Image (cartoon, rainbow, N blue to C red; front, side, top):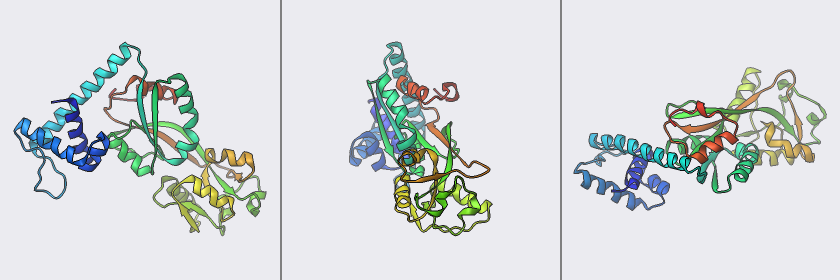
Amino acid sequence: MQIENFKIFADLVETKSFSKSAKLNGITQSAVSQQARALERDFKSLLVDRSQKQFQLTLEGQRLYDAAKDILHTYEKLISELQEMKKVISGTIRLSTIYSIGLHELPPFIKKFLHDFPAVNVRVEYRRSNLVYEDILHNAVDFGLVAFPVKQRQIEVLPFREDHLVVIAHPNHPIAKRNEVEVKDLAGQKFIGFDPDIPTRKAVDQIFRAHKLEIEPVMEFDNIETVKRAVEIDHGIAIVPQATVVQEAKQGTLAVLPFKGRAFTRPLAILHRKGRVLTPAMKKFIEILGLDLPEIRGT
């Protein structure tokens, strides 16, 4: 029996999906099923209750999962410690990030990290916010990056930085003649928003509710780049993170207007699965991001 058997089984339990476990481990769904049955033969116990419609462990399966997690944690810790003893900074770091952070906040950090540690590969997945949390819970990635983080029992949330929300408009739009705007100035404007389930959209909706404005978007999109393109062709105005429109402001393709009298901020955070062992490469990446390692528990 190899350590991979325990990892496949643990992934199966945590994703409750043979297909997702197969994807995480680069094997077929049939191979995952065969691995589960092989474990049942080895331990002479039924591990998965196949009489249930939804995935469910037997008591023996739960005990094996608990033991498998302990074994995997010890193994990962050993590998990390051996790498540290050899002063090896290598391997792969997997990131899951929402579009706005991945495209506009993350690149300078990745550039510096790859310059300092060329033996490390960095893989970035661009995902919707809810899927970033899912990736972390299923151990599909090492770190997640989200806006307006939500606390979850199995996830460590590390505050990263804060961005300001600003109004953007076509340079010839009447509102673009101002140096700054108040929320009430947006009444009656054609508004372009993010999809309703995106955290930044929820924050914008809350701003409107607090100022008793009823604004119905004329368009809704799931990523920042499409929102900007729609504003650039003068289909409406939008509220977006300031860091995402730096280039457009310099090039003059968008007018960027701060709010008058107060700032609306967008907190960003790094997500990490609690109890996950950090490799030397992962620790260095956290340092590059400017975060404090002692804040991470379970390392």
